[in-house]
Each structure stands twice: as structure tokens, then as C-alpha cells.
Image 1 (cartoon, rainbow over the protein chains, first blue to last red):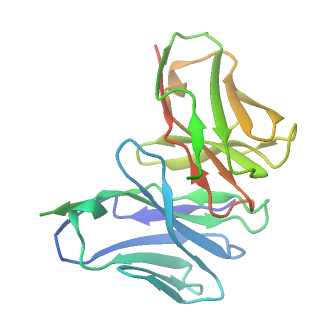
Image 2 (image 1 turned 135 degrees about the vertical axis):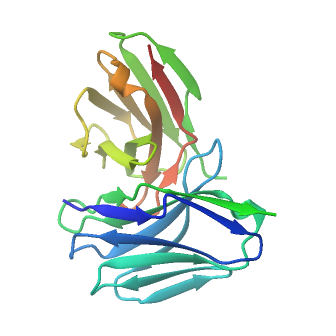
Length: 113
Length: 112
């Protein structure tokens, strides 16, 4: 089945700096890669997603890049703000088994004011 | 505002008890999911359902069962709770299987 690894597990940045979270996946049939943000006391919320026919997608301060050959994808947050502090999860779908999502282990991002 | 509502935020149970975790969604979604969240392990899929009375095992179904009698409600059942089932449980729903999941706020279950 699919295996998704996420790094780093914790990330601390100064407000205004950029943050990058990286994920690798194992299933070459995966074609959908979402990112979720989980704030304290809440469930994860979808913030951006990308399909395998696209190499990059942006939405204001966040962007996701995908390298299908290397089987890795990354989340980039620019001009970080304290409200970006949260746990971020990457995921990849299992293209050969019902399209279920496999999640990475999560990254705790702390933005220091 | 769309919602996935989990019945309890915190739950404390004893080993061997039967535990019911309830989830209701108001978006008329076909698909519903139960995940377990543990530090460093991310979210792991326990069971999912793509239609009323239909269910499929996820990656870690052992020790759990589910029930979906109505489209909007998906219940997770721990037949005989054990300490290794202490965890955060998250319910989710989606219109397209595996895409754009909406999550509830979670139930933190402690089994003593």
C-alpha cells in the first residue's frame, strides 16, 4: 500500500520568514495530494491540494509543488504569521485501492512573533 | 456553515467496556470515514462507508466496528475497549471518495 513520509516533525520560524514542509510517497499510481492544517482543539482542514497533472499550485501565501519523478511534494508558506502556527499534514491517495488517503506523520509549525 | 459533529469531545472509559462514538454530517455526503490520530503516526484510517449500510475496512480495523443506518450518521464501536485504543478519533465526510474531506473536531478517548 501507499506510504507517506513527512519532514520535519517540528519546525520553528520567525514571523515573516518562509516555511517548507516536505513529503515523499511510494505509490506511483497516486494522483491527488492534499494538505491539511489542524489548529489546536480542531479537526484538520483542507488548505490546498494538487493533482499529478500539475507541477505547482499557489493560493495567496501558500504553494504546493509536486515532483512525480522523485515522488515528493512540498508545502511552502511565505511571510509566515502567528496564525499559521498549527500541525500540517500531507496526504496522497491510493490510486489502486479505492482512492483512500494515506497521511504523513504531521509537522508542528511554530511561528514566533 | 457545513458541519461534521462528533458527539463527545472527551471520553473516559474502562478496559472491557463497549464504546460508541457518534458522528453526524449535514452536507448530504456519500462518504464517511473514521480516523485515529496518534502523535508521529498521522491519521490512520479505521473504517469508511460509501453508502448507507455499506462499510469497508481501512488500514487498522482490528478491535473496531462501524454502523451506518442513515446517510448522515456514522458510528464507530469499540466492542471491548483496551488501553491501546486510547487516542484521538476523527470523523470525516466527503462527496468524492478520498477528496476534500471535512473533519469533525475529534473525540479524545482515554481507556483506563
